Each structure stands twice: as structure tokens, then as C-alpha cells.
Length: 205
Image 1 (cartoon, rainbow, N blue to C red):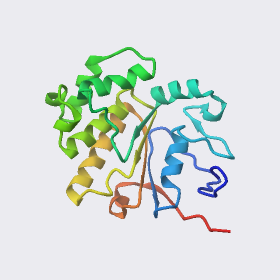
Image 2 (cartoon, helix red, strand yellow):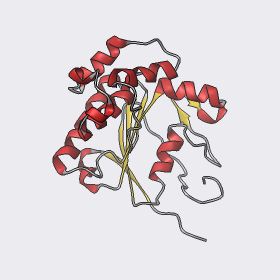
Image 3 (cartoon, rainbow, N blue to C red):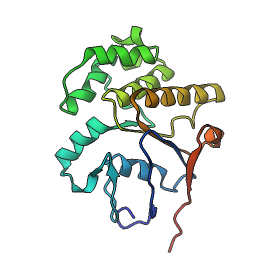
């Protein structure tokens, strides 16, 4: 449940550290809601969410923000890059907001992994769509999170770019030892995941 609307009813969802999971479902099935609950962006009406041995429901909002910044990376459908900041500055926001030291060496490392090292000084509107998407992934992995979440990262891409984005997510998750959970209605990617669940739209009363 979320609010007064039966958006999502998931009795149990347990994921081991380092696993890769695909969450499938049609629009309205609760995929994004599940991702936002796992990421601490929404609080469920009922139940408990535990990430890295921490009950998210036990944290106050400010503590939850810090925990999420340090332990959870989220790749959103929209990249939400700040247009007045360079790529490097956008990435440095991740440790800053999490109360961690500014680490330009980590920025260079992440950008190098994603073939963006030469774009550190560029502004978002100077990047291609694919480059902005990779910057979104870079920002999500900046703080070496325990949990990496990606919301519909391939649904608007052709087959080649879809495979490339999944390759990047897999590689970055493996590099930092993160659990990876991808939500999508894109069935082209099913064979890339050994573990998956499928959500059904809630039944109206």
C-alpha cells in the first residue's frame, strides 16, 4: 500500500548483496513505486524496508537522506542534472549532499570508467542524450553505494544502446560490489538477468 491507493502489495522481496534483479511489469503495476520505496524516497503504509542492515523506517528524514546518499545510488528515468553546473560539479554534489569529503580523484575514476573523462568541464546541455545518461549512472555510483537502483533505463532505447546501458550498469555494480535492481517493462532485457520478479497491476475494488 502507498497512501490510500493500493499501488503495490509485495509480501516479501529479499535480495542478497551483489545480486542482480529485474523487476518487470506493465505501467501502473508499481515498479517505480517499489524502486522509490527501496531507495527511501517513499515510505510504505505497511511493512519494513531494510537496506544494508538498516531499517529505513527507523530513520528520521535528515538521517534517511544521509543514509541514502552514502549507501543507495539511483539512476532515474530523467537525469535531473543541474544545468548551471559542469559534469564534474554535478558529480561532486553526490558526496557533498551525503556529508562525505569532496573527491575529485573519484570523479575522474568514474568518468574514465564511463568514457566521459574529457567531458568533466562540459555543461549538461553540451552533452548528447547518451552522455547525459552515462553521467546519471556516474552520479549514482559516485559514493560506492551498497544498492544501485535503475528505473526504466532501456525502455526508450534501440537494441544496441539498450545493451550498452545494461553493460555499463553491470560493470559499475560489479566494480563497487553493489546489488543491482532494474525496473522496466522492456522484455528485451530479460535474458540478461537470472533473477526477476513480475508485478501485476493492482485489482480495483
